[in-house]
Every structure is written in C-alpha cells, then in structure tokens.
Amino acid sequence: MDYDKTEIATSYDAGRGHPPGVLEKWLSVVARYAPEHVTNVLDLGCGTGRYAGALAKHFGAHVFAMDPSEKMLSDAALRFRALLPPHDRDHPAFTHDRANDQRRIR
Image (cartoon, rainbow, N blue to C red; front, side, top):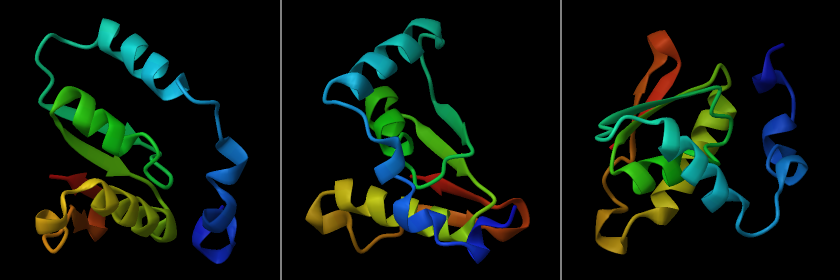
C-alpha cells in the first residue's frame, strides 16, 4: 500500500492514542531489554514519529526513523523539531536518505 496516496498520515495518531503514562511504561519496558549504553536506535515503521523523539530523549541516542511514507516521515520531522529548544529549531532535526526512506534524528 502506498500511504502517500492516501490521507492516513492526517489521522494516523488519532487512531493510535493512549492514556497518559503509557509512553513512560513502554519506555521502561524497552529499557529493560536494551543494552546498558544505547547509542543508536532503529524505529522501523516509525509512522509519524510518535516514539522516535521519546526514544532519542530517553536513551540519549540517535534514532534512525524509517517508514515507506514520505508524508509520515515529514510529520515525524515536524514533531521532533517541536521538541527541540527554540535556538535549535532552525537546524534540521532529521537528515533524509531517499534511497533508504529513512530519517535520522540528531
């Protein structure tokens, strides 16, 4: 399915909401199984980046966010930029590799 030919990116997050505290619980479970020092994380099928920014912040790691949808990757980039301090928002939050459909959170 080519998600870029649909409007799924606009409603993607609304259909995947969760109550407060769930993200923190999810991160604590992921951390239990992660190596002691995480430097890189692969968020395969990242969608709109709901977890990419949280993973980067929690682990202090680079997150490689990959998704076949350019629309969803663009939404992920906007979401992550919103998490940056104002003085960092002018710098690209993601680098884009079209050949591999991925973005890397710095």
